[in-house]
Image (tube, rainbow, N blue to C red; front, side, top):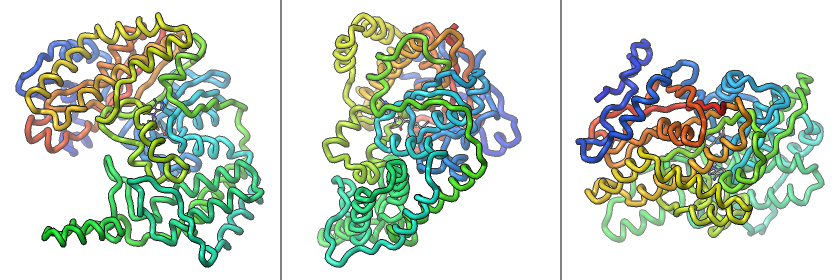
Length: 505
Ligand SMILES: C[S@@+](CC[C@H](N)C(=O)[O-])C[C@H]1O[C@@H](n2cnc3c(N)ncnc32)[C@H](O)[C@@H]1O
C-alpha cells in the first residue's frame, strides 16, 4: 500500500506518482476490487501530479483577500485563479458559453464575466442568487447611493419596545443574543421599505448574510453548526445535565466577542464599498457578456438545454462526504426566509451527499418523460447500471454494511445516489457541449468502511461511457487526510484531490 507523504516530502517535491496510486481499494481484501484496480491502471497514464493547483486554489482561501470574490464567505468555493487557468487551457474567448452547474458563490460566472465570456449557472441555495446578483453588478452601483445607505444604516437605533425577531428554524433557535435577533429583523424591514434601488438592497442583503455568523453564538464547523457555551441553548443543556448528575459540556467559545449586528453589517458594507470604489475607479468596463443564472437543480435544468451550446464546463459538485449545506448555512437560509419544510426539501434536492438523501431516480424519470426525453432517461440509466466499477463499489459497501463496517447505513444510498445523479449530469453535459468543448470537475476521493471510492477515476469512466475523451486527471500534491477512525481501523491510503479534464471530440 502506498504511504501518505509527510509534509516535508511534499515541500521538497520528492513525491512520486506511485505515492498517489491506490493498489488496495478494499481494506483486508474483504471485497472485490478488480474493477477499481482496472480503473487505476486505465487512467494512471493521464494522472498528472501538479503544482499548478494547490489546496488554496481549490478552496475559498485565495478569494478571502480578493475584491468581489470575497463578498460571500463561502468556504466551499474555489478560487478565481483556478477558473482563469482552466479557461486559458480550454481556449475560451469572449462570446463563448461556459457552464457551472453548481455555482455556489459564483466564481466561475464572475471570472467569465470579467473576461467577456458568457456563462450559465445553477444552484439550489438562495444565497447563490444574492451573491451572483451583487457581484455581477459591480459596475452598475451608484456609489453615492451606497454611501448614503451606509450612513443612514449606521444611524439606525432599535426602537424602544420593538419585539419582532429575525425568523429561525429549529437548529438556529436562540442563535443570536436577543438584541441582535431584533436588530436584524428591524434592519431588514428598514431596507425593504426604503426607496433604494434593487441592486443596493440586494447588496445590503449580501452584507447582512455575511454578518450573521459574526453576531451569533454559532460557528460553521465541519458538518454542523457548533454552539458557544454562552448561548441560552448550551446553558440550558448544561442545566439539565447538572440536574441529571452529569458533567457540563466542555467550554466552547465560537468567538471572543459576539459582535453587535449593526457594527458587523456596517463593517461588511464598508468592505464592499471600498472594493467598489477601486473597481469603478479603475474604469475597466470589460467586454459585455451575460450571466444566465437560475435558482434550481442542475439535474432538472440541464435536460432542457439545447444541444451543442457549451464551450466548456468548470465546476465543483458537492463532495461525496456527508457534508450538508443546509445545516452549515442554516442561519443564512433562515434569514432568507426558508422555513423548516423548505430546508428539508432543499436538502433532498441537493446532489445526494448526505445520508438523509433519498433516491431521485423516479423524479428524474417523471421529469424526462414530461419533456419528451424518456428514451434519453433510459439510455443514461442503463449505462450507470452497467458500469463495472460503480457496481463493484456498491456491492462492496453492501458487504461492509452486512459486516457492520459502515457507521451509518445511509452511506450506501448516498453513494449510489451521488454517482447516479452525477452520471445523469455527465450524460447531459456530453449532449450540450459543442465538439472540442472541455469539461473540468474538481472533486475529492473518499473512503467508507475501509472501501476507497476513486471519485476522480470513476467519474472519468462514467464520462467516457457517455462519449467524452479523458484528457487529464490533475492531482494536487497534497493528498487528502485520512479520517482518524478509518486510519486506525484500516490503515492509511492515498486519497486524491483531483481536477478531471474530459473533452468532447
Ligand atoms: C462545492 S460548491 C460549489 C462552489 C463554487 N465552485 C464556488 O466557487 O463558489 C457546490 C454547490 O453545489 C450546489 N448544489 C448542490 N446540489 C445541486 C443541484 N442539484 N443543482 C445545483 N446546485 C447544487 C450547492 O448548493 C453548492 O453551492
